[in-house]
Structure formats: C-alpha cells, structure tokens
Image (cartoon, rainbow, N blue to C red; front, side, top):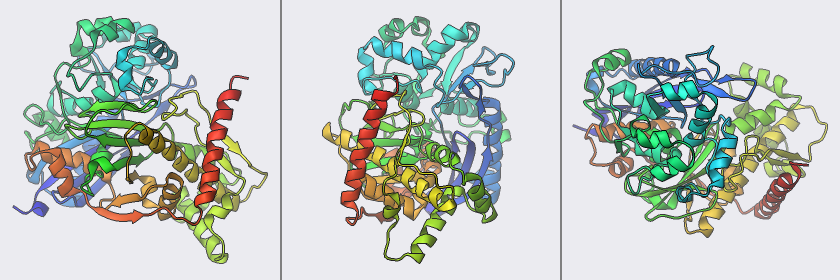
Length: 537
C-alpha cells in the first residue's frame, strides 16, 4: 500500500499545551488539534501540573485531530508520544500524589522548569560521582534525581507512598498500554541511568541519599527500551475508548519533546551527525548526534541511544528561550499596546513585531534590521544557563536600554532578544566543536523556525545555516515516526526518519554584518562573566 494511504498519530505534550497530529507515512500532516493545559506556579517558585488533566487533553486532541484529518480509527496503524521531562508521582492505586501543597492533590507533576531542588542538585554535584561525567559534569535541578531528593526531604509521606516515579512521557505510555516499560530517552537523559551499560548505578543512588530506590528499582524503572519499541499489546480497551482508536493499536516507547523534534528533523539531509537539532520553544534544546561518546563540559551527555537508537547524543540548550523573549517584552512600557494591536491583527506578538520591523525597513530601504540593535545588548538568562556554563543561578542582563516607550523600541528589543538567543546557541556549538562534536548545520523546529527574520538572525548570530523541514510540526512528526516504527511500517527509526522528514528551506549566514555580530558576541560573553562576578555583591 502506498505510504500516503497509511496513517499514524503523534502526540506532543509541551509545557503549556497538548497537540496531536495525524500523518501519512510520507510525513505529510493531515490534521492537527491543540488543547491548552494548566501550569500552576506558587509564590515559592514551584511549578506543577496535573497528570489527569494532561491525559484528558491527550484524549481530546487525538479525537479532534482524527476528525480534522477525516481518518477512521481502524486506519490508524500506530501512535507515538513525546512530553516535557517533568516528574509524575503515582501512588499504589496508580493515581497521582501531591508534589507540593497537600490541598491540591491533583497536582502530581513537578514541571521540568521547577527549580525547587537547587540545593539538592548542588549537594549531588559536590559528591563528584563518576555518573556525573554523563551529564557534562554537573547535574541540573531540572533533572529528576534532585527533585526526588527534594521530595524525600520535604514531602516524606508522599515520597514513601509513591509506587512509581515516572517521566511524563512514560506516564503517557503507561496510561495508554498499562506497560511499566520505560523509554531509555528520559531515563538516560534525566535520571542518570547508564544507557550504554544498561544499568542503574546503585552506588550512586546510595551516595546521594536515595538508597531505597536502589533497593526497589521498580519505582523508577526496571525494563528499559529504546524509543519506537512497541509496548505491551498496544492500546488497552479503556485507553482506546478514551482516545477514539481501536484496541491493540501499537504504541511506541516515547521521547522527551525536544528529542522528538530531533527525530523529526535531523534525518532530512541524510547526514544525521552533521546536523544539530534545535528545538526553540518555551526553552530551547540542542541535540547533537555522534557515532562515539564525546564528553563536553557543561553539555549533558554523552547519552547512548537516547534519541537515535544506536548513536550517542549530547544535549545542550537554554533554560528559557521563547519564555525569555516573552518575559523580556513584558517589561517594556509598550507591551500592552502592542499585544492589543497584535491580537486585533490575529497574530502572535512576536509575529506582529516582525511585521512592524519589516514595515519600518520598507520605509528606510538603505538600512538593515541589524542597525537597530546598535548599543543594545541582552543576555536573556532569566532562568539560568543550561549550557555550556551549567549555571542555574545565572540571571539576565540588559545593557543599553534607554527611556523610549514606543512600539518601535519594543520591536528593537525583540530583535535584540532573538539575536541574543543566537549567541547562546553559538556558545554551545563552539564549545562542542572544541571537544570533538562539531556540526555543519542547525535543523530548527518550534515557533522561531516559522519566522524568516528570526531564522536569519539565528543563522548570523550562530554562524551556521538554519534548515527547516517541510512539516510545520516537526516535534509531532518525531512522535509519529516512533508510532510508525512501532507499527512495523519501517524497520527502524533511522529508516523512518529518512522517509518522513524532508528539507524545506536553508537560511545561510550573511556576510554583511559578520564583524558586527562578532563584536556583539564578544560583548555577550563579557556581560555573562560580569553578571557572575556581580550577582553575589
């Protein structure tokens, strides 16, 4: 049967929404649906979600996407999931347990961006255990072991009552199939599981104060499989009814959302190891694939079979990217006015600001957008530096801001923010190259990839071509690829990537403003260093 007559579903659970898409096996998106989900932020900085709300949103979006695509349940051959690397805590009855305020028992997820475990991460790092070599030498409070240690120390009753601690994507496949098999992607990347050796380091668990997990590994995962592996007998009768699909539909072991974006993009050129996957969403993640292990200080990994089975992965990124731009813009006096105008025009605020920038350029054809940035420098690390400095205490710097209050200055602030994200990306690329993991091009997915202006700024700032793929939802595509492999439509993930992902456009770095970007990149690094020196004074 032709590939265009066979269909799979990809489900992406991001920080703020759930999306589902129906694809044919050529990678064409036939129908998509989105549902917002609640992010609970407390006064003490905790960030939590509800797994039951998320599962309801998954079911709704799968049904809606199938309806939009006009594809009947019996025509869906497989389904794949991805999700943020958030921690789900389940009790003996397989219902969620409260990870924060006991008055909110439905909030059973510690969201990836929650930094409540900062001190626990620092204590783990102080032990300098050999396991930490595989997270760039420094564990992040975004990872799960510090969060588990926080739960043990601050919510002991919940910690003791928990039967299963799960990464969110493993929770989703558990709800879909009843299988307790865990994906090697989140466990290797966020739980310190040694994927290349296929084992937990029990001495490490004892050393960091989580020895009871070493005594009962079923709580964190005993049977671990690579992404795309079919789980159990597929969808249970109950899950199939909720999703509007047929029982037994194959379900794939899933991925972290950013890694699904990698699967949906890096195979498009046929040169997987030459491509860096860059998923630009609320945060930004970079995934670099190598044939052998490469150790890069400040960059997570190397992880074996954590994205493309059989290959190694280095993972970097920025703790806040889209969220950093959003917060930066919210500080400007013209933010409310511009938001109102953007809404009236039916555009997101960033898209509207780009439209204004291009309109201004039309009135001054002898100038360039880069000229607007003169004297304005930004380090948008509102939520710390994930890579390559591995500094969760880093904070943002804005240098050169005047007293302008108009929309035009807000446009300039936005452009400077995007440019700064590009300099952060370049730092990761340059650091990896020094240690033997150089790349030729950046395969982008996420909101920023849809803007030609943003792509050009990123290409110029990072000094690498920025490549988009034909699918407008490459993260969803990555999950759908897993579903196709689980269904047996392709022999392996690498084959499915080549068949379902295709290059759309390549944005080359411009030489016109190369020296200006070099100067601004140097300033970016100096402001980072100055911020580190001054933050404790």
